[in-house]
Image (cartoon, rainbow, N blue to C red):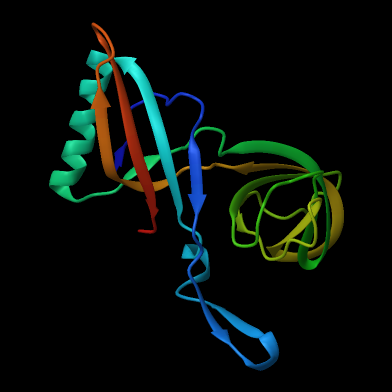
Length: 191
């Protein structure tokens, strides 16, 4: 799997979402909404990015993108300001660990890396967890592999990285040895 070169876009990135939902209109204005496909692939993101770089860096980006067109492969990319690390507390009852972090910004289905710390020696194992529920902006739950009753602190990491394809790009050269690349990256869901 290719990884996008370590060149950052400028701020002003545009992010768009278009969840895949099928809607059936029923009588009296009611409607039935159903996800179309697997739940983790329902909200692919589309990013409009601008790279204001040297001519040499623009050549690196263009060569990378042309190579992905030729091999028809996606690439790993972390959009600006998409990942974070936050700390909070947790309480576990059975296999359900309820995590409290003020304004966590995490949605159902997000995969997060959690580092549990407890005064007890029986805590959920550290690792990757899919968010099971998100009751409000301050709490969410994950399902642990062990059944315990305890509490402690957590460090939660949402990587923000994903797999993308570049569906279009353009290049302008505003002056000597500078280039502006405008790219549209579309998130894809592949193993």
